[in-house]
Image 1 (cartoon, rainbow, N blue to C red):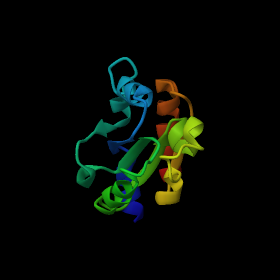
Image 2: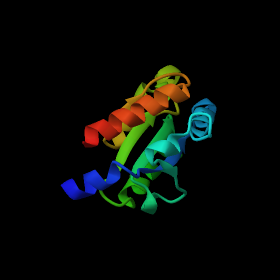
Image 3: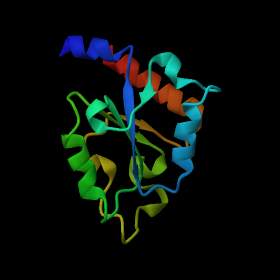
Image 4: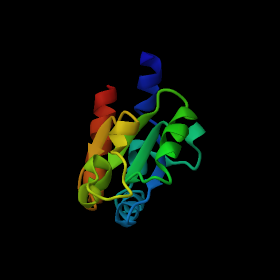
Length: 138
């Protein structure tokens, strides 16, 4: 397990899982991947399949239509797969806390390893959260 964690320090592959977000967090995640902020300098690459991902970025609030799919998605991932909650909504449901269509928090469904708060979080905050995750893996 230690060898796997050490190999992840240089090349984290992330998959973005939007759980009915307002799209602001998604824009900031993509902005962090652009050459201006350049998350790839840390070896981070966005992938399209959970089977290739080491980190799952979750943004938004689980609703009745998609909350079971998050657990199913994480079951398909190669182990270890780390979950990062991006934005206020995935950290604690934010303004949708008392919504009729929001049954639970993200951390009620899956174990969240890191939180990046903000509505929306700035790319600098996303980079700081990823660096904290890398330092936690050390």
